Image (cartoon, rainbow, N blue to C red):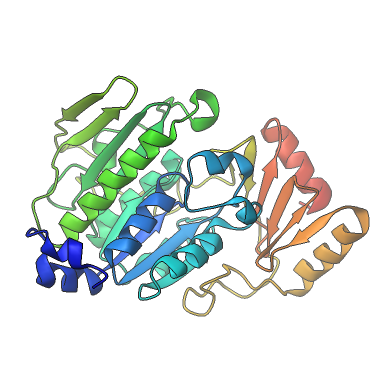
Length: 343
């Protein structure tokens, strides 16, 4: 009875609903777009969701990230999303990963585990990494973005459509939520379109071939034809620069209130195992991590979320040495990391 209204819709029907129940979808990024897309797919009865996010919930997220509430502030988004989605639909199986999606772990998290990937990330490096992985692995994925009152959705189907690198440039000077703001109406609209396209693709129905552009402030809709680039470095030349790690960076500005991510060597020698450490990308009880927690407890306010710790509300540290730091600039972020975590 849960899906009866969806089954009545003739493009889906009971057979289509059964197909959705046997399907899996990965959502990369659980911010304004990913949290809503994940919720829509859970309610639609997708059999399994793989949730990936490296960030923690902040007060300023709540204006548009409707899956979260005030009790989630400071909690890893992947964990909070899993908790909320399980209450929405307990029949949906879920794996969640509190980690930065990078060239070292993307295969372990996604390979042979999903039928489609929803790109809801906030930076070109991760988008191009997903693009590389999906083109190489022949997994369909859906690009989505939203800033200000504008948003885009584009289906990338390996061998059939253009890929992101056919038309997006590495040096693109793009607005961010921090510099241009964002309306919750555009993020909800883009997520609805993305989730709907995902359902079409999973059911092997006709999907949108053009790049969709929306401006909710002007009530403007455009369909932009994107042709495959015969000289594309990714889908034509099969050169996967981001998947190989050639283009990987160790510090990255996130789409948040002055938040920088710094990646460092693991505090534990054990390697990431996607099957054994679904909740935590690294062992959180390693000797070095426990020593750091004890040291920080003595000098300031420490919040322990199990999978990570937050010190004085300014730095969140994970067991692999990855940290999210609130700072004015990259130099200050590096200084804070060096001061409290080490080099």
